[in-house]
Length: 121
Image 1 (cartoon, rainbow, N blue to C red):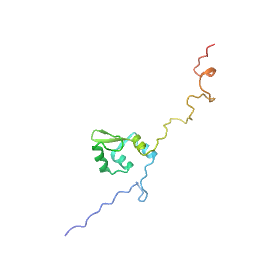
Image 2: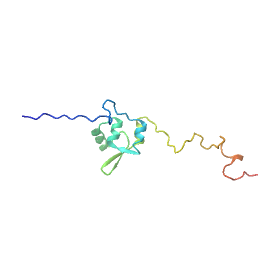
Image 3: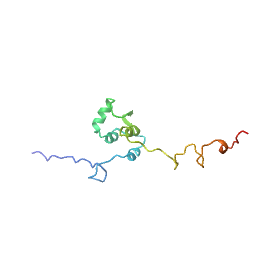
Image 4: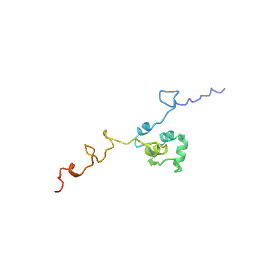
């Protein structure tokens, strides 16, 4: 007599949610850091894990990757470019696009020199 066959239930796509598909956004990809593992990169690109390892072994993965010991690492920036997503500019403070402008909105130089040197007579 044979025992009942066990079936495997697939893991939910999103932790804590059984009905919503897992969506990769630009912010979520950036939150991964500078690099991610091959399985995560494959999931982002819509490639199965086994196909990703086969492509990586043949140097045919759709984005550049590198091998670190026994592991493959994939930079996140090429993933964003491959998906035609632009990463937001990295900013450490709230600045406007006024590069090279003085406080009054004018360019540096002339009589409003901010270096402390006086203009030649």
